[in-house]
Length: 91
Image 1 (cartoon, rainbow, N blue to C red):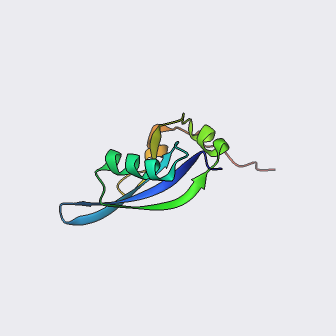
Image 2 (cartoon, one colour; image 1 turned 135 degrees about the vertical axis):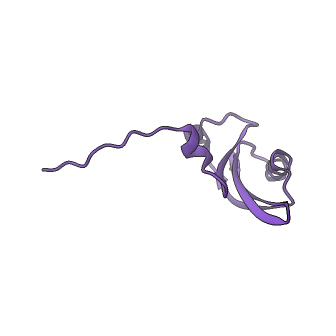
């Protein structure tokens, strides 16, 4: 059983189409779609895949929360997470 859903939302703004993908921590697919539409002011959604509890835990989501995991204008996850670059082993 799904613990949440990955949802892509189409947004029309200033005559241009863009999209945002959310991870939504809601087991009910219809509620997850409604939450994504409300959060983005979107026009249409596509349910990409179901997310297991481990996926949501890895994103730090609790039941009822959602987070943008892709936005065609920026990368929300990379912009809020710093990952150190490790040099390759030269041996």
